[in-house]
Length: 267
Image (cartoon, rainbow, N blue to C red; front, side, top):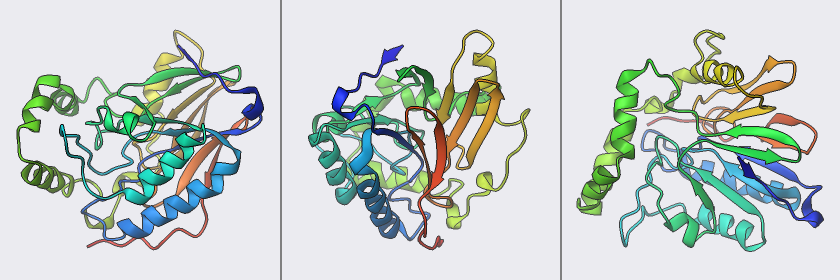
């Protein structure tokens, strides 16, 4: 378990959670508008934010070559630097679209990068935090791809591909995702306790140990589910359809919406 230690002078401040912005998604044509809205949200939370958790797929694609990172995202990354320079902790969890974060985000932007789920003790509450992909042991096809993408040797091989070609190939792959055409069918409805992979996983974890909160992204659907009398599963939704986030004030964890989302459009 990781112990999240807060400074006494900021112990009264809040913890924020966000996921699935998919900045730079080639399947969407409002990336700039969504990035600007994200900056407004970061400015909005900054006065009372002590820790920010980014739970994966913040970028639609991210791969760090030895001397090259994908262009763009300057507004977002500079704002994150403002947070970390001010002593606000930022934890970045890699998702299935931005798996290949190595040391750039840590060294240049001051974020703590997590490649796997983590357990945090926050103000006396036990949190299980992650992106939310790869949790269904029956999904053999996805788990095969998951292992390929996380393989260090194959990652090094991909680095040998010229960035112009490698990034173009990755963007082509991403364009066939569920975001294609600006649609997000997976976010339309809750599938029920027996079909929601993350919820099933959380309930299984509770059979062996207690967690006050499970916080995930990936699902693209804001969810607040009571698992037991003292345990909840929160999904932070996305910033394509819902513009939702979670906030913990030291007593309770809540889902909120950043109002007046920009119009979602496809190609």
